[in-house]
Image (cartoon, rainbow, N blue to C red; front, side):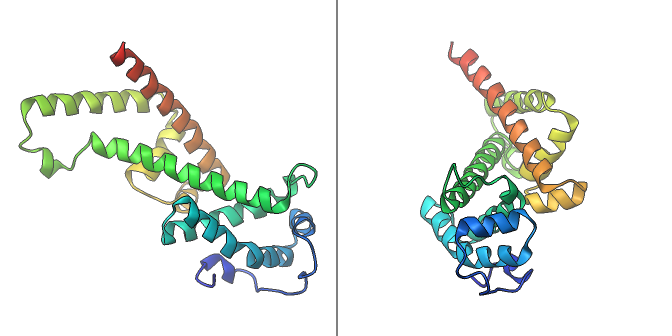
Length: 202
């Protein structure tokens, strides 16, 4: 999986070839970058293949594999070998990254479906225009439920299609903070849309 850009950060190594995954995670949790390089080489191709089996495209699987492996580096200190095998823990992280991607895409598609490009709506019928304005109003109401910090990351992620890493750099925030704000925003938005659907179906 040489195309993974992250692989170039640290050189590959065979010095830990005999160590178990659990031992590698213990070393990574203590900040051992060489151990991380060994784990990366061991799991990056497997994680990418797993994500593609879940339905991710080649490019998305590569991006998500990098995201998942980086998350392993950051969370290794919290790994508990008594609760799960290292491989299970790593693949759960990858699966959750894929689920988060799907959730973001669903929100983006929902937004685009009620906000067509300007040139497509210039000659729309009056009833279609009224429906669109109603949808836009509901989206504005939903966004108003968010804090300014949450609206900021939602706009960058969903409306400007910026990757998490770019948002993190642009806002000078840890990547984990960006993801946390997006996750909380999605929970609020989903709850708002569910309440609205319940009212309209009542």
